[in-house]
Image (cartoon, rainbow, N blue to C red; front, side, top):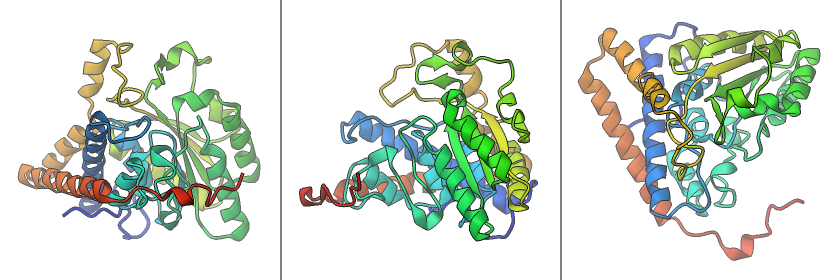
Length: 333
């Protein structure tokens, strides 16, 4: 069976040019995320998922490339499309699936669902239903790490919609002034809900949003996990050395809609076809074959991922509903 403890494998500091074993770890994790999302899609279609779910299929390279550059003790803060971050950081699949189904065995005891999956054991500050809501959490974690001299760093993941949120600029300003060990990562999939980024985002340069604070800012091919990883390693190394924040914009694409029921009628068919040809999993598979990895090995990883997700689905279905008596527990406001 596949490892389900994330892409972090404990082999020391990551290299911008990862070796074969680490690249295989990335591929396994990306395949696992894709199968997980398809499993969630099927559960949603069957009416078993309360509320809406926001899938990250197509964005696996941005998820995995960054998190593979971190240590297990480092922090991440996610967004509403965050299943991939949780998997890559190391939260067990059964606990994630149970949470999505609203079951007591879930990572948040079934109380938060897909938008509030929090796992301090692996430094995951949680998915978040607020646009840009994870940015101050990561910035605060970075401030704490600096004050306590723990050597940890934090990554704030957010979508392109958060580029226009004042909170991002406030946190960038603070991080730059105090040289906080934080990496701001925009997963730019081109759409904020149903609206194309070009229609709501002023200014010719997205990286200028970081550059104005003298934060090193880079545009990255978010469909190429090796390119993302190389950029992330540089940013993480800078943060860990005490040199302050970095800003990465990973240009990617969501293959699903804003949520699982979205028919995506606002997308151009040629655009969809173009991005499908950039599938990050297929691209990495091609690279692995060029490096001598056989198709049978890739097929085995696919089968193992499917089996792990199927087991997680069964665990979630068998898990009990939360007890009504616990409704007011752990509520602080």
